Length: 139
Image 1 (spheres, rainbow, N blue to C red):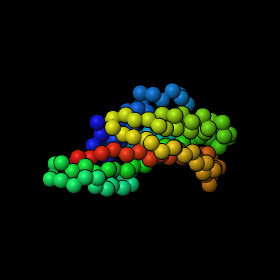
Image 2 (cartoon, one colour):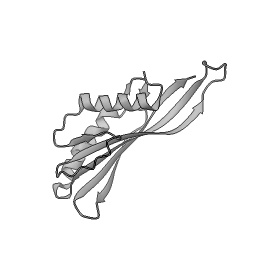
Image 3 (tube, one colour):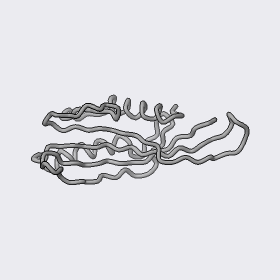
Image 4 (cartoon, rainbow, N blue to C red):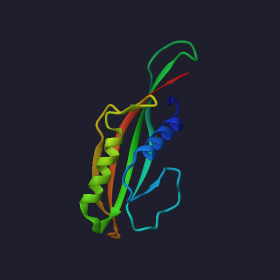
């Protein structure tokens, strides 16, 4: 059960590790500061909190807060691999989370796939998969 942003990240990263089936990428979590210098496709998942509101009044330890968050999967595929590989990885990232509820994380809204084009050096095709999720914090 996730009640903090760190617990939410842990649950999401574990879901990726347990369920990702593509083998043509290097997984990097958001805390991995090493730059990837390889030539195969890779994906980096990040989770940030975007908002919070108090849902209930009451005494301390009995108040509920609604946390809103953004999950982004940054997908980098070699520019010469075409849109097919980017599309396959994007669909897999979306399918992992769209409409899902796990560890008290609720992905109720749709998940967008955004094609950002090729980088300046014309080496990488960048695609972002973004979706929002919520969880409740009691304190």
